[in-house]
Length: 413
Image 1 (cartoon, rainbow, N blue to C red):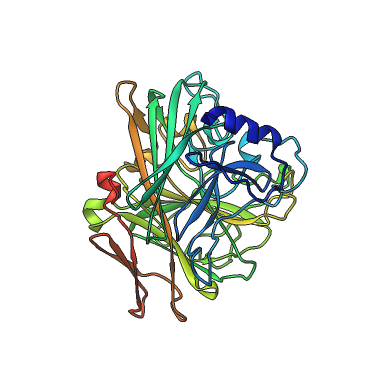
Image 2 (cartoon, rainbow, N blue to C red; image 1 turned 90 degrees about the vertical axis):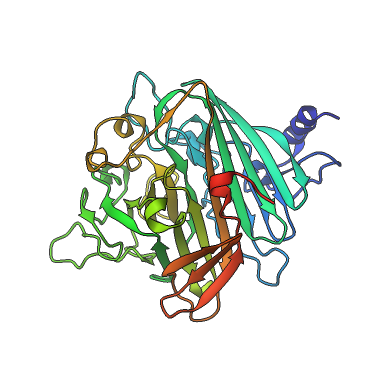
């Protein structure tokens, strides 16, 4: 049976909540996971699922061959509930990491184009191209055609035997013109305040969202002072007078609020390595990390969602951390990101030029490392061939096999 008839049969017959369906030899496994048909690829160490609607990557299990597997990504609480109409298509499968083009809410029309939040690709069907294994590398491929601005995005997710790492590649063809874009990794958060520690590579500066990110008229609330520039993630101005600055390196915090900030990364040439961000879950014994080329994705947007939205479908129950590596103007979308804005005035690009005659490729790395007791946060990263060492302020070191060279070569072995 060919690939497409096989997938069609699965999608027509697989009930919601089914645990698994094995695929015949040569076919990619598809399961319904948390209400969404999802393609699955695995190595001995990692198993990942990607929704065929929106291309959202979760659940992901790292260290699946150990006594302590790790599932770091967030799955929104309405996924296992009966389907309802959503305010935006991206909310239907919302989970884990997904690619956005154009990144942001896209509330305003830009250049005669009206895109849905985070672009069509975040809520539209993707076509499964299949998966294959070459040597140690297993790769899953999907593609999505866009209509508002015609183009094609091909997603490649690769796993390497012996590594607890995901190598992502998004190839954009067509979609000519300027656009903000990026990854929208969303991590599950514990309820205990301050139990997660956030660190990043050197930044030029940070800024809180200049507009209204959480609208009280919609049952949403924010705690940080809009439009403030700052130099330390640990000292971010609050919205109220005489209240100490917020320490955004310790999360979750400020239950009942949802905020957005953006960190502008220093370039590779200045730091001597990829830009990075880490989230250390010390009580669970691991840290999650992401690596990128800041020439392609020059900023990190942090979505701090701590039960701060009470409208549908949120209902005050969502607790997660968005670590969104982008080139964009906050989450404002195409119109604001391609216009003159507060970041472009600082010499920070908020969109990329996409060309019809050549593809644009966005490479990205995410992974998990187990850490020993007492390893609470990351101070710096050390890069050696096919290896990354995470160094704590007290000098503790944890190394992992990571082919960070992929960010420049696009090659794995």
